[in-house]
Length: 323
Image 1: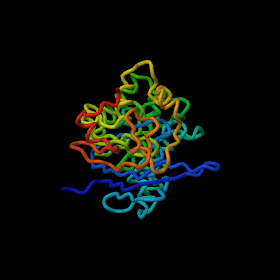
Image 2 (image 1 turned 180 degrees about the vertical axis):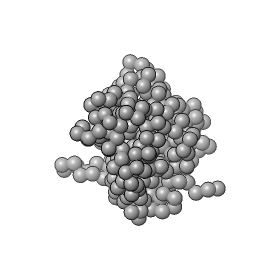
Image 3 (image 1 turned 90 degrees about the vertical axis):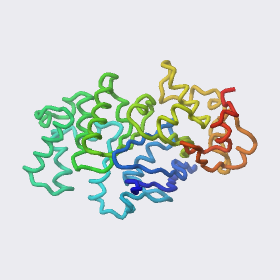
Image 4 (image 1 turned 60 degrees about the vertical axis):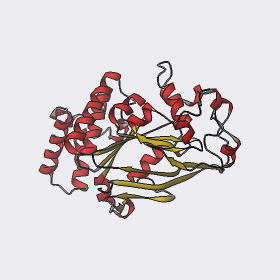
């Protein structure tokens, strides 16, 4: 069996906010293969974006290791790492200078990272615009002259310019109209088929995740509570939190970025679990004294990895967290 393209092992990151320590990412491990899409889902504040930024090398973890092609990403020269792992920000328009034509912004990484000359850079930009379905004259426009869909396509084009191994995208569809979302989604799938690029996508939109991803990580308070193949997790979620967000996603009246406020248990119980407790203990409908006294280890089931003391019972439907 070939080694995974990316291997993340026991990643942790803590931030000091005033007089409080926040564990944004807590012992997270996963693998990503070439040509594969991994989605990270979870409530606001679950650590999704922090994990994405760690994978790009923009944030260094306190603990753990990330191997890209069996080599620690922080041992790569920074220019080479920026070629191999590209990042699409949640608000792509803000990543383009308002005073510079977008084509010039696309040319910069080619000149500074790949050391291409002006003619070579122009040809690469021309090809990239064509690849994402934009007319060549768009290169002469300024960001404010372009629609949200055009800016998102440009952000994808810029990410692919260096022919990366991995593109990390933070909520790539959240600011777009539904019709434009479908276009961008189809574009990502097309580009993956053509280039075999791997995607790591942060998203609240579970419908999008189901359409585009091969695997999914479900995060809560920095912990991966469940992970596995998308088909398996969506067809038979095991962890109570995964079941909760999938059920909530079927309600069109609720914005998926506001999952937490629609849980009466969550509203009544702020996140005050001790360091030794399960992170979901204050919100879980099947929590027992054991959950409050002992943090569960990740359990490997048939097709999923689940962070719960009662994963085996839940998998076999011996416990119903909705009752």
